[in-house]
View (spheres, helix red, strand yellow):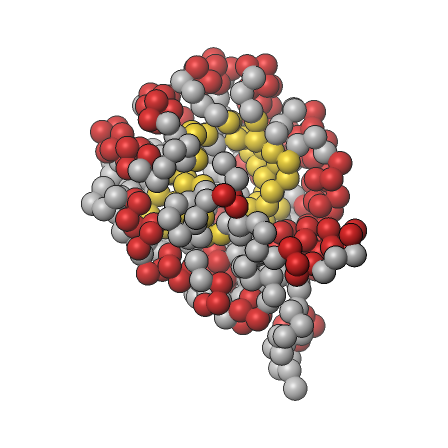
Length: 367
């Protein structure tokens, strides 16, 4: 399903269900601050099935990502994958790299109709990855599962976190992504929530450099490249394309959907709360009380997030606000305002008369 082919006022391109917060890992960046035990208030199997039926009301081939914690901590996950598939959903899964992620489990998920397996690799070696995930053996379990997915013909996605601790290893991770025959590399730029508040993000100029490098990787790689919580990548790609063709970059604005928190993207917690994103923890309702379709379409917060002209600061002044829009999650985490400017962005729009990048770093006021 092409993001540009859907009306994001009516349905999300990506809907994530955090099936559980239980997980055997204690990853340094964990949004959920996951714990070993399951929450008794998780959606039950029956509630989960009803939720999947409600999701189907968004329309044919709706993309649903089953996430966590570790979704494999629930004994009904494979059954729910099969149930969602039978309803006509495109079901994908983001398991944790633990001993539960065996080749036999991968095979069972594929047989249940899973459309894609997304694994997390945050370093190119066991030493780097396992230190970040704080679990010996996580790298080995993850790579083993990735190879099992490849052997089974199940499309593989690799997710990688970008922060000061991981950024220098990105080229080596890209090589591993290629070696695993992944179809997509999703590069997540840290948002300071959960355990992630203890990590150091990379500064905006370095983020800009990484995104330019990712554009080059995408041009040469056999796998696709996307960013998570860094929609500036779309602006960087548009600028690079314009430079290559001598066409104004602004001419490309609006030709692709800008998926962002609450705008083509939504997140359901393990307890059934609907959020614009897992990294923007402002609930707009409960899917066990109100169908997720109604909440997504009608919640005032979602409606504001879908209005690029509601953005403030330099994001509101930016000519790329419909293509990019900035990370609403990072804006909220750093300022308390989901419509504020994204502090990771190094670009200053021509019509913006606020502080320069240097003044923002030093705290000096503009003239």
